[in-house]
Length: 534
Image (cartoon, rainbow, N blue to C red):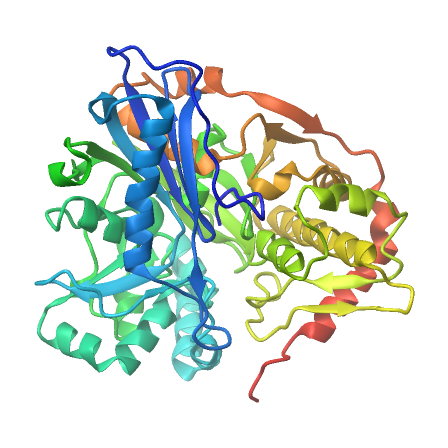
């Protein structure tokens, strides 16, 4: 979910000279699905030093995706130490720490001992696919939809309209947590004994950094779980009751830019304030300075995420775009609507593992060396298909293979599939969100691929601004932390610091892609329901 150039594992920036002793810095961390990255930022938002480590996902069964929490914690501490060392600064020069994290990846642990009950269950995990299917088809959900439609007719309540269209997905925490509660007896016992804590990655890291003295999440992360009510700004007692999730295990929800506590001195030698927790996509939105209603961010990292700033109120949609809280800073609450595709960078990394290329940077030239993919189409669905198709049982596939098909055709088909999914998401955005689009800004490692960027610009017929640096989740976390400690004065100052690398403008008419897009959609439909037990 973070900005990752596929294939990259570890990277540092060495400073040209040690920083003066009086200088102060903020840390921005992004704990993504494939990489943990830390940047040290100065007052000009320049990266003075950085470090990154690859996150190892665990696949215990087909469709299951987990992360070892102990390994993640060790890597988290290591990248901070390495980045500060690479910057040539001292820990006591760090005035604040901001943490951006992959969202909807969760863990539960023993409240008394702090020991976790299981690995992190990733947002990409499909173990709850059958639960999702059965709940969405259940009488309870049908009654809920019908009742809320009637209530909306009389009250015109946005909340009632949103609930009337609500559907569970595997990416929401909700039914994956229900699966854990149903299948792990030690978690069941801990809940009964009021000794269970639930947390997304941000909450777990805060708990570890403060050695258990702080237990909280922020509004952006909470709103992505699937059982948070963005209209009333609290955990949804209705949904929690329906699926039997005890509210008692959920953390308090705080502002995004907030003093969450101080890092225990034993970890880094000095106490460092933790002053921002934020979901990675909301962090990238903030880092891109998408502060105005109608601003759009297109992140192409592990997955693709298309977000639009909807202003100071959540938008009701037809179920394709999900209302989220972007950030809450004091009295200011900014809402987003988000649609996503699960497999973007993951598809490129998969192709690299098959030796279709050595470095992800090669894929652009490989695609441009051909006039077309010779009728080969790729469906990027290792973790199912998200909106507008919403099929967790879809399979990844190539279609249209021939004797003449080369690895160049396969690579081009993969890149084209990313652009086609971008087009699907953008069309859905225009259908569901009645807000004029002001700017479109891209980030994430895959936006480094000019072939994908140009094809996306052509397909949606819009200019797309690519920033000078792609690690927007790190920058967003750092700037939110910096605002909390007065490192930067306000968002206007941040806008002046933003740098654009180039703007992609439409060069072909969308109609020129019509036949290929239609054939790709046919391939997608044939990949659906592949893993269904029905």
